[in-house]
Amino acid sequence: MENERVPVELDPTLALSLLGHAEFGRIAFVADGVPTIRPLNHVVLDGRIIVFTRHTSALGRAVRHHAELQVAYQADEIEPHSRLGWSVLVTGIAVDISHDRHGGQLGLQVESWMKYPLDMVIAIDPQEVTGRRLTVAN
Amino acid sequence: MENERVPVELDPTLALSLLGHAEFGRIAFVADGVPTIRPLNHVVLDGRIIVFTRHTSALGRAVRHHAELQVAYQADEIEPHSRLGWSVLVTGIAVDISHDRHGGQLGLQVESWMKYPLDMVIAIDPQEVTGRRLTVAN
Image 1 (cartoon, each protein chain N blue to C red):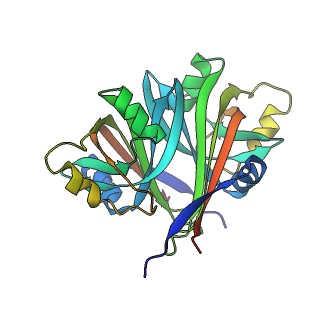
Image 2 (cartoon, one colour):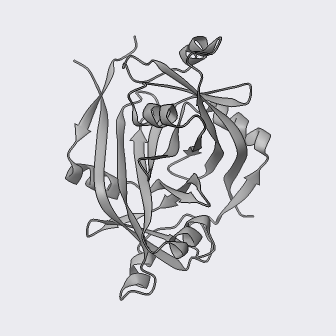
Image 3 (tube, rainbow over the protein chains, first blue to last red):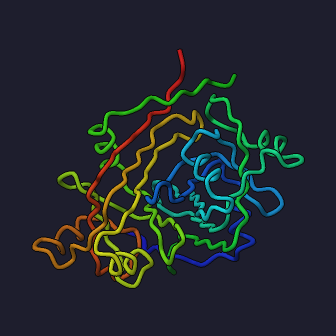
């Protein structure tokens, strides 16, 4: 029998905490006028999402071309069988912090799955954090 | 010991086929000038990605306001332990096909995990399909 899944809104603090426990997410941004998505590893530090990329990547280029780039960052953990879990969405501003004090150290805290040489640390300052848990209706 | 993961580019036909076997993905689009992401269920039919939503959702509203809305659609299947798998990205145009011949039937082929009443069928016509498999370097 199919469960009745219902979404329950999450408190922004809890939503950001769930995001912090996820290993990767997806960033959406506009590149050359067209929205695009890239999967990325991240860490959440002091309320900011830190990602580590290359300055030649699509994201790196977009951030270099816009001092304050509007982005969305999303992660979810959905258990495939029950299809229950959570989804978190952050909208915010992405800024290059590669050359900030501690910027390089922050980048090294991101556990990258890729073996590319990474050289650009980006922080996303959240403007809005929303989250939903998919749960089963009583 | 940590594996060396390397990305291998996938042929667009294979990439779309992998997407067709996934149950859900994420759509990115610009709503009120800000990029956003929404998780969605989908089916791939005749080379188009079909999603089923509500006309009052953020996506529904964006498609109603733009006859041809630029979107990105992304799905991935990453095995959490090995972190190997694939990721596919489609950029294309989203159009409302709710009132097209067979539009309603196409919507019903999308297995929605939500029990919302859905009333808007959207087709994404791919302009570009790219995919990468994360594999282990020899």
